[in-house]
Image (cartoon, rainbow, N blue to C red; front, side, top):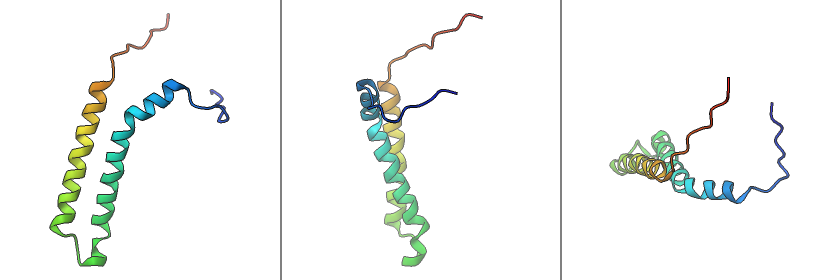
Length: 83
């Protein structure tokens, strides 16, 4: 098992990877917020049409951001190990 040193700062490549994925992360957080709103809507008398619309829009945003993220990644084949 590889030992991970948590005292090291992230490398510029790791920071760039996080920055590239941040819009997708934000979309997933918004989706989670919308789902929580639906699940806790009983306290407000049930989910409203606006709650459902918010959930659908959040789901669509996650899909868009995921496709944008995947389209922006360059193809890097993994090196094969000799047998």
